[in-house]
Image (cartoon, rainbow, N blue to C red; front, side, top):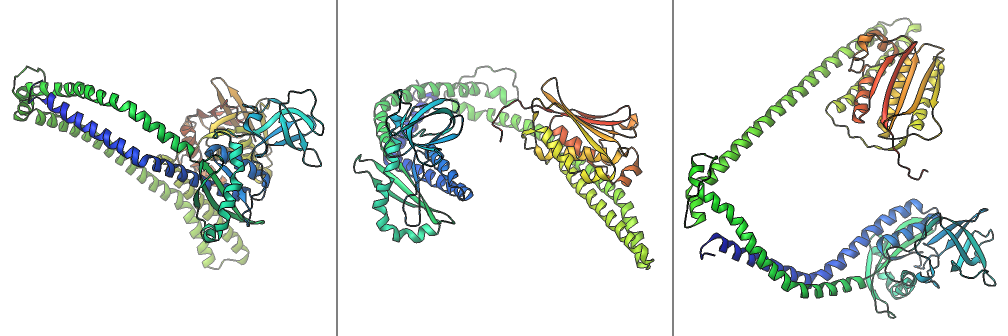
Amino acid sequence: MRKHSVVRKLFVVTSVHILLVFSLVMLAEGLFFERFYRASKVDALERNMNQFAERYRQSEENERLVSPLLGTFMNENDASTAVLNSRFERLTLNPYYVKLETGSKLVTILIPTAGMTMDAIPQGLQPGDELAVDGIFMDEKDTVLHPVVISPNSSEPEVGMVRVTGKITDVLLPEKRSYNPLYQDTIIDDALSDWVPEVDSYLTRLQSGSVIQMNWRDDWSGVEYAVLIRALPDDSHGARYFIAMTSLQPVGEAVGILKQYVFYIAPIIVVLVILLSMVYSKIVSRPLVQLSHTAERLARLDFTEQPSIHSKDEFGELSRNMTLLSRNLDSALQELTLANVQMQQDMREKERSEELRKELIANISHELKTPLGIVKGFAEGLQDEVASDKRDRYLALIVNETDRMNALIMDMLELSKFEVKAVQLQPRRLLLTTLIRKAADSFDQQLESRQLAIRFIVDEEKPMFVMADARRMEQVVLNLLSNAIRHATQNSTITISVRRTSGGKVSTTIENLGSPIAEEDLSRIWDQFYRAERSRDRKSGGTGLGLAIVKHILELHGSEYGATNTISGVAFSFNLNESRENPNES
């Protein structure tokens, strides 16, 4: 390794910098890590307590919902919790439970925090498992059991106890908790007894929504805990407070183990830094040497060959030649080319947007001209004081045309969102037949006025779930049903069929009896403002935008859609991807 070589310089600088950074990290770890660890744990617990307060506000009227909230909070945060009344006394709530279906009734097994250890509770209990419990019933209906022995070994229960055997339907037990969580849950009372004498000094802050924090040490175990208290939303029972207590013992243990780990790993890290710095220096310097050798040819913008040119100093050769300049120039030319391509794309997009804007303005002008003319004619008639028997009809027609113009504008605004791709779907798993039936119910008045009926053809053996945006798909069904009702023959039946097809699809067809659509118009009915019969939609109330909106929504869902003439009418169809997941249904 030469005295002034790039490899030597890189090796020395890299090694010194890495070792310096490593030393600073170790120093910061020893001074601040434990404090940071504790602060992070307490801050996370405080944030989750605020979220719990919001859930409590939604469930405060039903105390049966509060207990599961406590149990879930304790499992997720490895903390013991309790709800206090206005006198800061602990309310009797059992956060952990097992529900058994015994055949004739549902029995709730309340897991007490006092008098039971984790060893007495079988691990891995899941809904569907069979379980036997010996205990004492706590209510007159024998539906709440205080357990004494879970999964007893004896053939008969002890005197004074009953045995309940059944299938688990719901279970909430301590999970991801520190050692002996039931003991930790019981010592909240001890922490409260030490804190309550000072409660008056904190009461104002509690009532303002602040979280009070203190550290408390268990005299029996010597373990230090972080205790946080905050007020809950007031309910019909008066003020309520939420206390959460989490052990800080894992923090100290983790810091101690980490320090031991660093003590043993530090020499290995130093050796690895030296070796890797040497390898790194050679790897980094190799291309620099090659670049210096090719500087003269690169200065002539010749990138085809790389002859070797010897030099005493690699950086000196690199600086005397124009390699860096040529590479920057080549990079700048490439960037300019890419920028030019991007600019052309932007210009085309701008031109397209301008065309859409002009087309939209032209369509608005065309579509609003007729209703505005009608409104003006009737308004002039009112101004000329037409006969009183015509005034109500004129006013009704003016209101009707105004509603039509408002519907047209709203549809155009909706369509413009799709045109500029500003609509984002929010797909979820939904039952398609339920959505269609709900949409059909909203047309009862129109169906009755035109003496129409709807017939459903649905395979009810297995529910057909699809992955789709519920609000947008409801918009599709409403538009297609509205279109079918407007063009259906009076005293006829509109048929809606939903069936599974090959390829994991669910196909929906809406067919009405009526005049067919000309073959040359079938492919154009999805265009905005296009009508096979321009007077027909205006007379029946359409804006000429409904099918264009349907087209955009279905294309965003990746759906295949279309319209066909049947023997006696017209059928619109589309398909969606079936969701074969099987989550719990409410």
